Length: 119
Image (tube, rainbow, N blue to C red; front, side):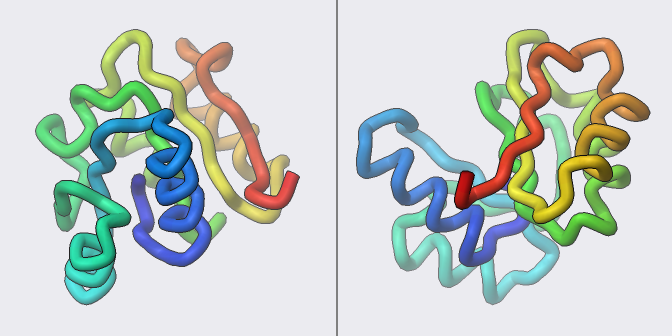
């Protein structure tokens, strides 16, 4: 989970509740967000940045950051994604997500899902 806030955190809690995920790693530049998410059981591991250790084994990478940084996040995760990893977002605009996926993750477009938390 990149961006440990209300939307991404709620989504991960539901996945945990449904037994669809076993371990959630949270990545956020805000240490308070990470600590709170750990205390509440939303995430199991916390990292302040994207690195091989934080996402290298992820089956799903959920990007829950402001839409404006989505291209940077896609660029930063690319070298660390395992071949079978899926990437999704929870942004409010889909064109920017699709553009970021095409630009930075073009070799894995079938594994990229532009999504919306309400839809």
